[in-house]
Length: 415
Image (cartoon, rainbow, N blue to C red; front, side):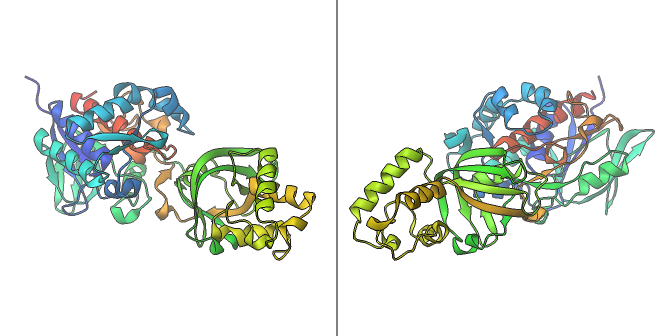
C-alpha cells in the first residue's frame, strides 16, 4: 500500500479551504495553517459587501472574456471545476444559491458567513487538521519541498499548497507572505498592483456629489490622447469624496492599469435609454411642462436633486433663465452634456483598498494542468497569489476555487 502523503496548505481563505478539503478527500493527510487565530475565511466574509458573490453563472467562453490577462492559463482549471461545479458543490454543502443581475451567484441567505461555515464544516468532515500559526518559511531539500517552518518549529511534509492571497485588504492576513516565499524559492513575481479598486478623480464635482449612486447609466473610459474608448459598461456607480466607486468603476479599473493624472476620463451617459433625438424631445416636453419656471427648477423630473446644480453649472446656462427662453443651441448642448458627463481621472486608491491584487507569481513558472511549481517539486499554488485576476462578478472567487481543486488533487496524487 502506498504511504499516505502529508500535505500542508498555507492560508485559510477561499482557495486554502477548498484545496485542503479536496486534498484530504483524495487520501492525503492534510494540515491547514492559518495565521488569523481561530478565524478562517476572514477576507471571504467581507466579499460582495458581506453577501459573497461566489461565482458567475456563465459558460467557460464567457468566463474567459471576463479575465483580461492570462485567461488561457485557466483552461484546465475551469475544465476540471467550472462555475456549474461550484454551484453544485455549495448546494451539496447545504448552501442554497440564487442568481442575480449579471449572472452573479449569491447564497440565498445573503450571508458570506454561511459560505465560510460550509467550507469549514467540509474541512472537519474531510479530516483536515487546522493549525493557527503563521508559516515563516517553506523548507526544501534537493529542489523539492520537505516542510514548513513556524515560530514553533519545523513540520515535515511531502507537498505544500500556497494559498496566501494577494496584498489587498492586508488586515485580513493577505500581506504578501506567499510572494516572499515564492521569491525565496526562485520564483518570479510580476508587479503587484490594485485591481477592482475605486478611482481617484481630480474633479471637485465628485466631492459635491459624494454619496450619490447612479443606476442604469452607461460608462465609457476614454484615453485622453487618442480619444479611444478603452472600456464601456452599463450599470451602477457612485460618487465619493475622492472620486468614483461602484461595480462599473471597479471593473473599469482592471482595464486602465497604466492610469496617470489626466490620462483617462470617465464619461457617463446619464440617459442611455434615449438617443440624442429622443433626449431632445424629452427636454422639449419637460420645458413645455415647466414653461414659466427658472431653469434651476425645471430639471426635477430628469435628474437626481443632488446632480441638478452640477449639470446646470456645466451647461453654462443661467440657472435663473426661464426655460421657455432657452435656445435650441443651449438645449442641444445640454443634451450632449447629459449623454457625456465627463470626469477626469487621477489614479487608483491604495492597493489595500483593492478587492483583488493584479500581478503575482509568474504563470510561466507554474504548470496550468496541476498548479505545481516548475521550479520546486511538491510546491503548488492556488488563488489570488497567482498572476490572475478578473472583473467583478464572482469570477475571482471562481478562479480561487478552480485552481484550488487542481492543486489539491495533484498534491494528493503526487503529480
